[in-house]
Image (tube, rainbow, N blue to C red):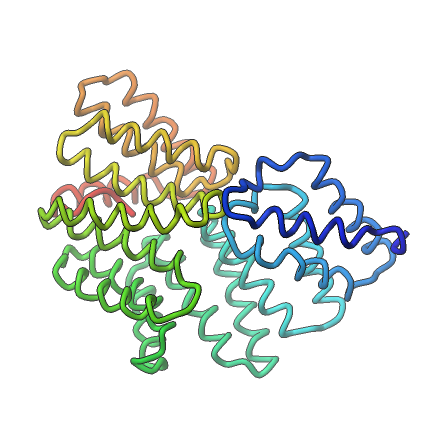
Length: 352
């Protein structure tokens, strides 16, 4: 019965799951069952407004990347999208589909993410929010880049940038993606310039620790590729220090920074230190085993390190995992081979 739902207990669960130092995946299944039971009652009663309100209660958790592997949280998001459709609430549907697209992209399911972002953009337009629509359209550029359609990705990013004022802090997001595309072309000095512009804009935006941390990691990578190792190390440490302020809440982001840091150490021949960073990165996402896009990159870097150490058997084992995770994501291994050849030829590091 709806009247029996313990809303205070659910609110307490939502607050606990978003505390720094708390890993949502470590919360007991019996706690998450409270959420499942509440959903059962609300869906059975077709109380769609209450379903959306329940999703809003867990909004902060769902905006982060350490909870999407929990079945109860996944179901909450799915039922909220259903509720928004039932109510024909276009504004809410646009927001929820945008969040779904982010989650799918983080996992590596880029084609599915594009579908979610495109519908999100249409729903934003239907609700009169043109800037929300622009944000969702922008996110498709990340997906197209990941699918190796860089020409289309760049066209989207450049179109978005033409529509955003130079002093708008959000502009840092498309600038950062433009930097990635520029790095793909091997132009590291221009990449660094774009990343510093993006970083300055992110730092103007309140509550932007995670955006800043991600940009610092990107900047560290590019600075390191240009041979400024000490500066790169300092930038990586700044990124990790920021993420440590939100310990447990952004495990995927922390793993991403540690992976990039490990690549720097690998290029310097510090193989054991690099493997230590990769092990920690793996630990951070092991409780959320659906982040295949990051997982294959971690295993690819391990493959390279074991080859450098002449541990051929271990290298082959890790490379088989790379191919396995890419098959799960339905990503082309031929494209991977071409990317590897291009990046190693230009000396710009491993595929991103």
